[in-house]
Image 1: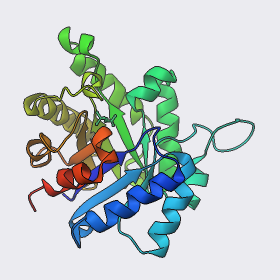
Image 2 (image 1 turned 90 degrees about the vertical axis):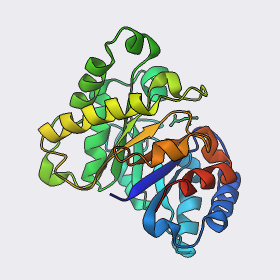
Image 3 (image 1 turned 135 degrees about the vertical axis):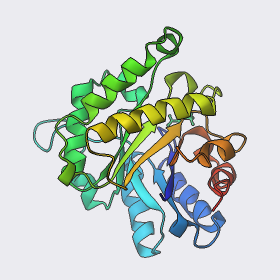
Image 4 (image 1 turned 60 degrees about the vertical axis):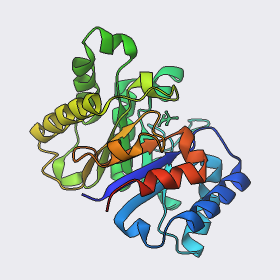
Length: 254
Ligand code: PGA
């Protein structure tokens, strides 16, 4: 399985800064690395067009992701951006169900499921985030909670329509905190989700990847990214620093 490393730039960088970061990333990555690892950047919506233009003009192999999409396709939904609009910008991936959106923007499982359907309809691969709070983990309810998140996310998806999917395990207590789930915790959850998804007959598709996110840095990336169970990483803070991001990418043994 080809590993994937996604840089989630969150609400950082204007489009000029985003261009600079992309260009620095492009000349820092070792040659041909992108043929062996999918390298993805996820800037704010305002930078998508600029980044897409550079990727297309300079024929970069770095792939473009959005950080969010609307649950609606068109109409009177002020401030929203549709999957159709993203696909016209050659966006290949879109993060969906990130805990910051679930919490700060009160996104329900139902909304997230609609977004996933909209993305798949436009051939954009959803990066479906899921994970538990510290309370859920401590009360031993986390596997239950995660199963329910996954079941809601994939509701109504038809196997024949699902080509690429990425599931990102992001324990909320590990995001931006410097706390990282132990490899044992991450492997336990990801193995359980793989089994659950395969029961739904999605995971006989070779193109479904299960990745980890939450305080991934050069200090812990080697263990995470070389696990047989974990197909990649969703990197927040460390992706804003090219040297750190490239060190994370390079920690994958090829
Ligand atoms: P972090 O963020 O690497 O800064 O913890 C990860 C994420 O939220 O995707």
